[in-house]
Length: 599
Ligand SMILES: Cc1cc2nc3c(=O)[nH]c(=O)nc-3n(C[C@H](O)[C@H](O)[C@H](O)COP(=O)(O)OP(=O)(O)OC[C@H]3O[C@@H](n4cnc5c(N)ncnc54)[C@H](O)[C@@H]3O)c2cc1C
Image (cartoon, rainbow, N blue to C red):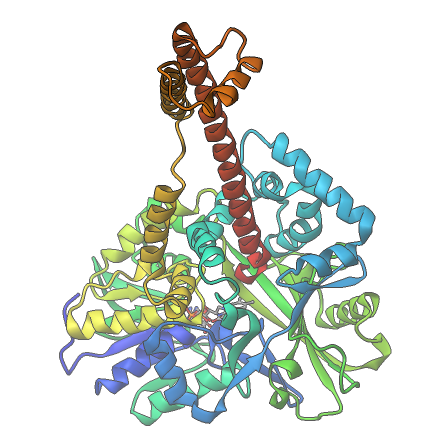
């Protein structure tokens, strides 16, 4: 990518967090980017919709990052309007609410003794006879936690989110997310800094006073103040190219098409769409690969309830299969300013679906009725208390990591990287399960590639960093380094004992000791020792304190010492193994307690 010259015009596609961050960075460098956005408002997936003065996130958006540059932007943009909020979330299952992240005692007490016992039995059964293969999400979780726990806390919610049975969801998805959290680091935390890690994310988070939309509207205002141009309601319908160079984009606005030319392009629209809209078209294999990348969509039924307080949570995960709603947000608990009337409460009922399926196509009025019914069924509010409602649909909310996505994405990536004056950024631009901060980071780095000729690889920015960064802050040394030191220390202290070697050495010492002691007495020494040694004859038949007894003693001493040494090594190795296994299991549980955070 050639660095910019002052006369260049950069076109940014999409006014979500990634596109707006890139445009802001360009204006800070004195350029005047043109941002085109198909919606009527900014913020993308992180927008805040307003209905009758009540504000609704499209999925509650916590602001959490360890990327310093991102933190700095958030503070610069919103200052005092950036709040620190306490977090409470629970799981609704079987007419009960369980704290989330799960608390062992709370969970077992609420499940009751019978269910708790079957969970333990099921866990043991799957430890002894696990699935021989772990191809699916179901097999993966069952092998670690037993079928009972899988059914209660993983199955229904995961199926609601992804829309496919857990027996069809690939195990790599779970394995990747758990691996990303690093089992090694979890073990480390249990041993070195129990209870402190991820505390921030679990107990509190940052949030703009008027929701994430407030942040992105403020950024859009800043860009325009600095002479950048923002065109809303402008859908990019075609991306014109000559060979590997993009010449311009055609936007459709108010039914009119218009060609917008530029010298450089930064696109945060879904990479599938980017490829599909190229003119002339991309090669067939690239188009096929792009078309195979899939997404999961969702819609929010927004309800205004005539009650000042309904429940204390920021959000509730709804695992119960008898209702279709997946998660319920209580926006007042995110920020009191989200509601204009303190006597009312605004809820966002999130339904995961696929564009054009029955739920997606259901008329808004029916969806509002469904939401009211399910709210009452769960017992959170009476349908009669719901004053009003509306629906917002969000397409391409989750890039899906299915079995074939990696290969398809690689094909798309090679082609897109070959377009010399275009960079693709953001969550759907890179088909990565990124949060706002990493989407923003891709925008920042794309601009640095442009302005400074840097070679940042945008495809490698991802969610893993959150947790590593979080851990680095709390540990004085980097977690990976600490883990390495700890592992080396543990290996040295707890090195596995060789049973035969220890048996032979203790046997040799034992045999020699008895031989020398017997010889010492036979040669006339130690009258006090003789009776004690003679007693050994009761345990070692044929042994006596005589010249020939020295050799019998040597043999007995060796055998007894060998058995003692061997047994000690065996017991010590077994205890060590059990301890390590328990530690490993606890760490695994710790990770899975927080699993829903990553969906
Ligand atoms: C339910 C849910 C909960 C989430 N919770 C959190 C959270 O708690 N914390 C967090 O940090 N992140 C969260 N995220 C992730 C966050 O929303 C995304 O990481 C972020 O919005 C990605 O920004 P982006 O700019 O890459 O993409 P987007 O937000 O998708 O923005 C892309 C923009 O491009 C526009 N566009 C698309 N096609 C065209 C076109 N043809 N022409 C013109 N414009 C186009 C879109 O309208 C959109 O405005 C959540 C996401 C979801 C779905």
